[in-house]
Length: 478
Image (cartoon, rainbow, N blue to C red; front, top):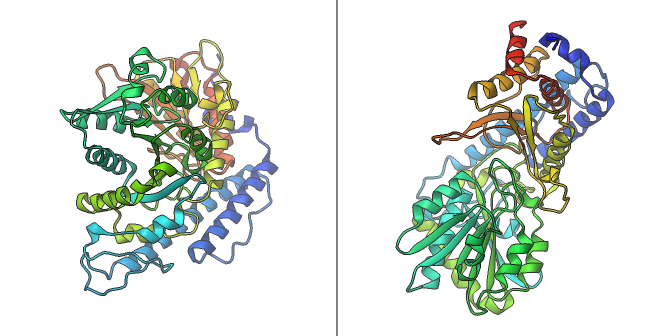
């Protein structure tokens, strides 16, 4: 195969420059609107994105947009700091504590903070259910608190039984850590395997990821699970915990509640990290959002369970600090799905455009939307690429090629954890096991700009190579 110099690659990039300019202008308009929402002043000399469609201008536009986003983030953090810094962790009695938008936060000692105004503001009610929302320092601290609460509230003499259907490494670790003589918390690879079929009717709680956060991004058949849970004893209380972190507020909660409403004595808890998809990609603060939905026949439990969980949160210190409350004190937090919908849409579009031939470097492109079904659960905020290698050096090579080519164009592609940012980032993941698993993660952002098409183009050019040896030679021309 002919080895193409890196600097010549951008001459063959396929993109519609006018479409990119329009996308960049939309991003600029969104940032201006967001700045007004946060009451942050921007440079008034910038009123619109240049309409020039040359590559150099498109690249400068993207850098400008990222600088504006970073400026917003910095200024908002500064406002939150100035608001919270004067207060002691144990303020004088009678102190009225308010955020920048005048939301009241109450505490005599910050660890015991109550945030009912926040929780009421972001909570989404649904007909047929009594409900409330609680905020935690993270989704994992929320999950642990909920499981401990289930143990106390059910007051079982025999062992509490729970199941986990998913793949997130922290949830897998948690299930192992808390399994003891009082709690049995088992992990199941698949919701349809024989080992779980017999267990459905015995669960006191079950944790489900609609899209399993493993290296295959498999979609959980929630309808099948609902069918199995119908066989549980009617009087048995079940806590159904759905970790919707990967979908954010785009998770089809109403659809699931309709199914839950057909089951007796099932309490649904919609749990997610609010860091990823609820903060406009700016990662202001770690926060876990847990929304509880009780059927009408269980409304007598709502107040007791809410007060127990709120008190337990204070004792364990799993709530937010006042500074963190100020960071999430903006109108769109936790309530809108426009941002998360765009993230999910762009990742699906990117995954469908990756070219994968036979016997080449890219072995598999993994995204729920490529599975042939288009229901509401077949979505994810990133794509996994499996390469035809078991060498971590080859994965590092592919990351290096993507970064190097983008750098030559004047584009910086961050390598970092997580997803849901305003622009694209990548990450090579290697598990800590005796035989490590390897995967390349592409987390497409909210803007479908020049970086979107540059990274896509580079990946498709990499996929034309049949050997990592040839690809490695490519870097020698740099």
